Amino acid sequence: MKSNIKSKINIVLFFCLLALTFAASAQDGNSGIQEATNKVKGYFDTGCDLMYAIGAVIGIIGAVKVYSKWNGGEPDTNKVAAAWFGSCIFLVVVATVLKSFFGI
Image 1 (cartoon, rainbow, N blue to C red):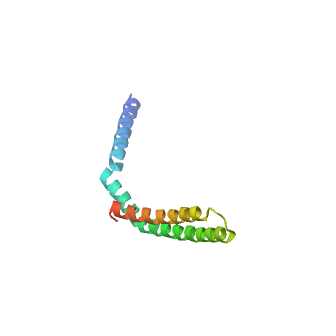
Image 2: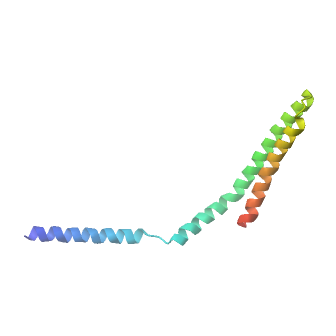
Image 3: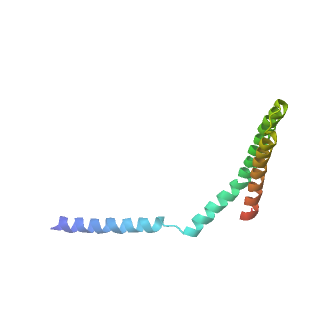
């Protein structure tokens, strides 16, 4: 009989401790969102610099391709030049717009 009461007490204590564990591990949602926001803001400038670097590499590759087409006398040189130039401008504008949109 005593062992039955002890086992019931142990089960009740187990569930009480389990409930306290869950209550202790719960965090405020606002602090988690704020921490994530600070981390994103910390990496944002690096990401923009990376976008500028990718735009520069794409611009160099595009310039070589357009130069090759121009020297080859191909008729669609203007269209290729506009496409490569437009992609470089797009990367720079996107980085700048994201900075101003998020206020960073």
